Length: 461
Image (cartoon, rainbow, N blue to C red; front, side, top):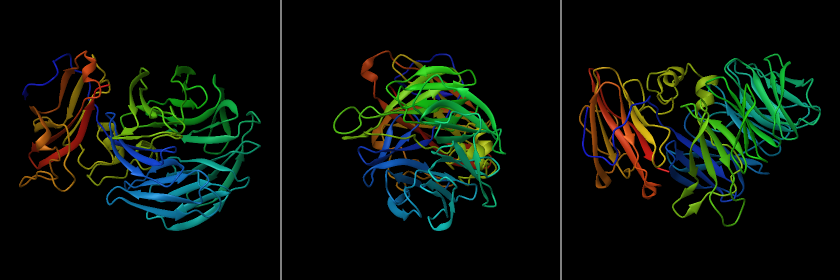
């Protein structure tokens, strides 16, 4: 492996990881932002007033619901269109996508099914109404938390049959609002009026009730390590199960999500309205656990404020809902890509070539660039401070895709190697580097594959 002069010095190598796009909406500033997993806000889209949450569809579109709105919107990043879609009854609250790409939108008195294009398919009323969070398990069942007494959850099976389960042995004030499904088929619920985490089986029976040492519970997610994470919007406590270990992330946690690299992302609302610091999304390494980095939701002169929900990624859909599908059409199933550390929704990232930067990129840290490629594959990485628009990049005869690094902003660093590699980087312990961001892209040559690879980035904080 060879390289030209860089800003960093060599240090011991560590394991590889990659990147992915992540979306989030900000209620106070009425916008949708796309975030690179290295911490940069890459795009801003203006939305109608009072957006509530964003939900990434398998085809790459972003569906969004608003507070007290009778329509939701579908944003298509490919052409920038924003399409309003009416909801059947009341205000939509949450959205989940099944293995066919159909959307299941919960809210008000029930759940409405839509095609991937947003055409209505069916309306399913729920006994007790008050539909809140929705998730889909590995068997295709849709589970809906219902914020009502007695505490209950409804299941819509793959045939469309609806059954309500009243939760036994739980606090009468539970009022379920958030729900998540793990890889073992357990359904986890929390409510905003009781400090309990409830686990139920596929038959609707309560299997576990754990007392959570925090109040104001508003979010629950499951990671790839078998952990269940619960977030408090009133204190900022992040609680991990098993064990009920508490990690403090004040002032609040407005939502949780897991990315395809296994990190937990916690939304922090720092400003509700008016002027003030932009809200943040904080990345946590679940194996430590430790706070990796914080992304300030700022794009140019725009500050994301009033953020009230989790970011959205493809992790749950790729791992639980549709592990055997190939969401990005690169010839590799979602489960295979997750196991390999490549990206299930990026066809430029697969077993032939993938690269990404390490999780810890703060001033003074030791980080790395990981290259995942077969033994004997020849690869090259380039770096720039910017990208050219899609369709305007450099192409080469016989190479798939295009090089989108902006040559006018090239920073004079090139890495060349053969086979998998971890390139260690020691970031200078100098606050002047804080906020520095660079982008990287590579190409790979193997017997049968010649192409440009995924785009990654590094941001120092």
